[in-house]
Amino acid sequence: MDSILQIDNLTVSFNGFRAVNHVKTEIEKGEIRFFIGPNGAGKTTLLDAICGRVKPQSGQVLFSGNLDVTRYSEHEIVNIGIGRKFQVPSVFAHMSVYENMELAVVKDRSLYSSIFHKLNNEQRERIEDILVTIGLYEKRLNTPKALSHGEKQWLEIGMLLAQEPKLMLLDEPVAGMGRSETDVTGKLLEKIARNCTIIVVEHDMEFVKDYATKVTVLHEGAILDEGSVSEVQSNQKVIDVYLGRGGEGECLM
Amino acid sequence: MTEANVRNSRFDLRRLTKSKELLVFAFLILLLVFAPLFLSIFRVNLLGKFIAYAILAIGLDLIWGFTGILSLGHGVFFGLGAYCMAMYLKLEAAQGKLPDFMSWSGLESLPWFWKPFTNSALAIVMAILIPTGLAFVIGFFTFKNRIRGVYFSILSQALAIIFSVLFVGQQAYTGGTNGLTNYRSIMGFSLSSDTTKLTLYYISLALLVVTYLFCNFLVKRRIGRILVAIRDGENRVRFSGYNPATYKIFVYCLSAAIAGLAGAVFVPQVGIISPAEMGIVPSIEMVIWVAIGGRGTLIGAVIGAILVNALKSGISDSFPDVWSYFIGLAFVFVVLLMPQGIVGLVKEMARRFKQPPNHTEHLSTDKAA
Picture: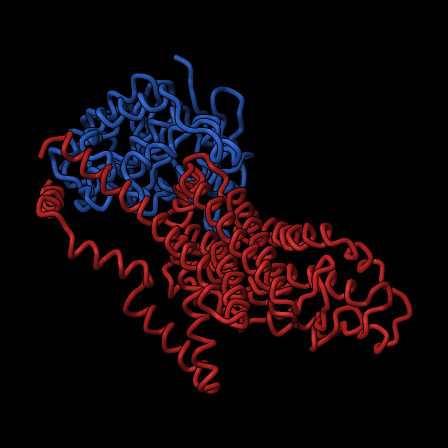
């Protein structure tokens, strides 16, 4: 299989503190890759570096073979095919669900197009398809205020989908969700993974077990282990620093 | 509730509120069209000044109410537009000679940058282009560098100080503290004649309508949603693939252009422009008009500007000292008790009185879901 993202010796530091330290990994097309690890392990920072939110001190992030994303600004990275969802659901509160989707589905994001071009039929159909997929079609004319926490997360994932990314970065997509909502989200990710690679940062070990193709365990900015869920689970170092501590990995133990 | 019902009730509600805003605007314009029949020419002239302010308020609302960027220096753009127009009027009044204040300051010939303003059309174009250009330069460096929120507001306020000090200091070129005044005519028509005053009033009114309709067109387009999205979640906008800086620079330039136009409309009717009109205090007052009228709705900005200024002239006619306290109190009152201003209050009241019974049911099912 081809790899879609190569992270090569990536180091991100904040005032001398190395939040991400010489991370090297490769993500293959169609994977649902999970980044796990205790708080402060650098998972979110790693996502931030991939989507251009922080600039690394050294190293490269190669996307689709040869594009070094660390050279692009955030909106350019989106336009080359990387979508990012943040931990706290961030959707636009004063617009309807449909209008939220509208801003995401447009491909020509220039000033001119935003004044003179309306959505075409294909884009409208695409929005409706996605709304059906994320289960928000009936609520498309409501503002996000009327949505539950889980639905807001889905809306944001739907907005990402509308961008038609090749790679999706999701930061704790199931945090604050109940079991059934978590399962719906998992199924949604599996569906999305058919034509898009996904990287997820997550603490919910049961969710990780159910949906991960491969797991990368981070600890203090560096990769501790990488492999399938069962491989990682049996690694003594991983149990010591993360899974065995009870708190965040309790579902597994 | 079935899906079709939801769709219908929502769409109707929206179409109604949208067209209602236009309806209110049309009604307001109708009032202003017929106002000269009932008012003395002095009052009409005053109303013309308020209309100039209303034009400015629309632009300010676009950047503050819609995009969430609080500019505390819009007096500068207004002032620059006004000075461009005033330079033309001054040159026409001088009839080929050097304007009076220049000879008092010892200048012997007309400075080069005054020369283009002998042409009225060019002066009007400059009244819009110069503020736009300034906004572009400032906007480019601030928004590209992601200076935002309070930092931008402080910066814009500094702009107001810089320009008012600059204009006071350069007396030979700008007329100093006194500003530019003593005009005689505009394109050959005497400014003291009632017909000219009435014509200027109707031109202002027409420009208000054009500005309103243009901005209304913009906010109904996708760009309107993008601006609101920048206000509500700039980060999400960026990660939806838009460059917020482009949109911010655009809206800053547009609102500066509108402010410049307002300044050009203001000067021939009021007969004077001085640095006092472009400093911090007038800049903040402009923000207050929008806040009181209701930010985020274009009609709110228009109502706020006209109402507050009508009150101002009413109150300061009878009690000149009371005005500052009054406007201060009104601002505090609005911020604390009606954050969406007059328009927000009216909408809320209308919603409470006329809420259809099935609407509550609809909302509660949403919450339960």
